[in-house]
Amino acid sequence: MTINTVLLTVILCALANAASAQNYYPADIGNTWVLQSTDGAERITYTLETPEEEPSGEQFRTLKIITEVLGTSSINTNTFLIEINEEGLKLHKVVAELGDIFGISRMEFSPPAVFFPPTLQVGEIWETLGETEVYLVGTVTVSSINEVVAREDVVTPTGTFENCLKIRIDTKTATASGFSRSTSYQWLAPDLGPVKFETSQDIIFELISFNLVTPTNPYDVNADGVVNILDLTFVASRFGQKDPKADVNGDGTVNILDLVRVAQHFGN
Image: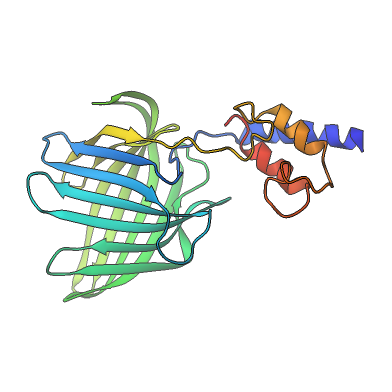
């Protein structure tokens, strides 16, 4: 048993090193990012909150994106219901404010769509497709192809962020009367999140402030501030037991699933 446990720990360490990646969208409840247009006319605020409706649970988040025209009463809010699991950030529903004329649209995804895949790197591509009903327009189909096209340093009013991923978002909107296409760009900084956004109208938003919550890391089982070989050893030494501290996935028994979870978060 001891030899098998040590061997398993070594294998998982190698897996963790091969699969480790920066977190480009920290998804802890309470995280906030504020971006402002370079001309000072508009502001976008991203906030992650506890969902007000079902489904609920530790793995679900509500992402609110509030867009304001400064100096006016113009405010639009888009709300995204997101689930966090091994497949990355999955999108369940979008509620969008379209203005006084078109009202509010609701788009549900079943099965959930990919919001962000579990790892991001240059060349990564994923697609989102949804359908909704819009007042005075009828059925509207919206599809977007997202591609990580570059790794760049980004300068903002809050500082310079290195090794940001630049994501191109090609969107197609189709109605009974025709379709339109648009392209926008988003930049994500490692372990921080959105720092820059460029709309299809070439309006550039840059990060002016942010607040990231420091969560308790359930995979840092020995509480030394980092997930490493010591945490893997701790979990491996309790293999087959019912130890709540080592049972990081909460299924009642310390097993291979707990070792895999710790390995996946190696270095965090």
